[in-house]
Length: 227
Image 1: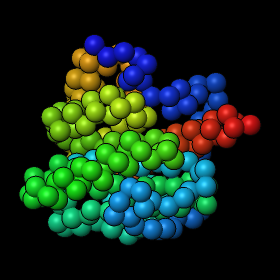
Image 2: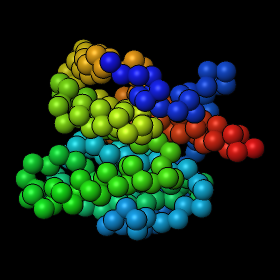
Image 3: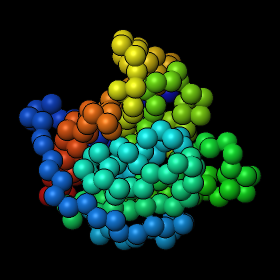
Image 4: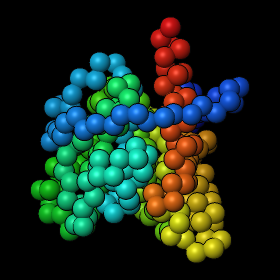
């Protein structure tokens, strides 16, 4: 159903098999600014920008803290859906990590939901600096309609993205691979080619090296393409 051109991320988002896997060492990770509107986001001076998004309580803040090895860099909240800001962090003074609000928190009021939807859509669709959007999926659950619809929307808008399965350590024996395969097979019903995906655990550090190596590979590819 889906055309490859409209639903396959740009080629630079796929690992280059001709190179050995690169490694990234995060030396510095600093909070820069929070923005309540997409048009208030900072000028990143041409540096790559990677954003993380997912349903509320998917483990986004914990994942960011695990990736950067900076406990408390991204603030976790006991109240799902509390964050309504776009948070920018500068990594190694080379690229930006962006923590986006979680979507789909049912207890929000109508006005809050509209405000959140506008914030996310304007950032995702209008932010020229966005290099890749990492969509977080809870690996413990069967495919959720809201996640599938969000990914479908990204395809329709031609947004470059990758999928990050979270909470891998929370699955019972044998369930992790089954749940991941079920989600990917569901996507294959409408997608001709799937985006990259990663399996992570914030508690165990699973997937950290692979995800950071991927970002490094994309950064190198972008740098080389610019000459």
